[in-house]
Image (tube, rainbow, N blue to C red; front, side, top):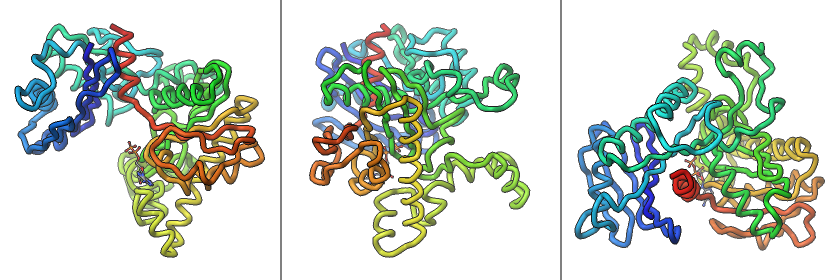
Length: 393
Ligand code: ADP
């Protein structure tokens, strides 16, 4: 069974084709500049790149299909060799606690969630509609970033605002990066060699977008992102937690609309905003080494917040068995892992510097006598989407 995994952004489309008998990755690729001009990067044993017109997502899906069945460079004989398509959908609101086969009703529900994720859900839906048109009869499955957090208790997901606002507008914490938190926590349990549903784990997904999740007995019981992916940690360009009164204050002082203020918090804040250097941790680390005080402040703030969340989630679960690092920074930045764990000694987290000297591999990095295990687990959201798609159909 071959499953195509699609992750549609506003002007991009990432894809992977997996053989789900073996879970082997057959090809992957990326379409960029959709609606502008169009660029395809197709990665297989016969890699190629091309500038090709992509006026919309439907055209991009068609180009991906052509690349998959290309007689010389493709990996499939015909389109009928794609047995299902799994779509990453960012926001499933309160409706979806699991992955589902897309029906007209599901499409409508995804559309209704668009106001909660205006940058993400509309392109996700466009991708689904393009596949329906180009591959009629092939089932589409929606896999939601929010679904893994659907069992969060009320005390964790409610905001302390009038309850009617929750009832009327569904304003509450939803959480994101669910497929990643689910995957890396399950792999961590395997590496530790204990049943998944017997562990208290905190997962730290540290990429451009970053979130922390408390997983007790296999269930997400709290997570740092909220109604939108802006809450929580200080991220590449996102502010994360702040006093909500800051928003009208900025609007008044800088004479901005709500949309402009939100743009600052989403795109010009986080470690980029504080450092004035970059959102990329490699640049920040180089700047810090060369004596840039604001780069150091940004990195210190980032690590402090991650550690604070880990501490608070140890309290939320009344214990901690393991902490897991993943995504670009979590998988690769040795010094950042060390700086975060330095706060957590009192909880029983102790890093072995030799074991921590590792990038991009699943590995335990704690000392053999560390009460709490620390691990690095490379994330694989596409594999979770493909597995869920197979299960759903
Ligand atoms: P996203 O998927 O949210 O765009 P990623 O998970 O790809 O983000 O993570 C991007 C981040 O990972 C960037 O800040 C980048 O600096 C960081 N990163 C990637 N490789 C390394 C590395 N070798 N050392 C330190 N940071 C790295």
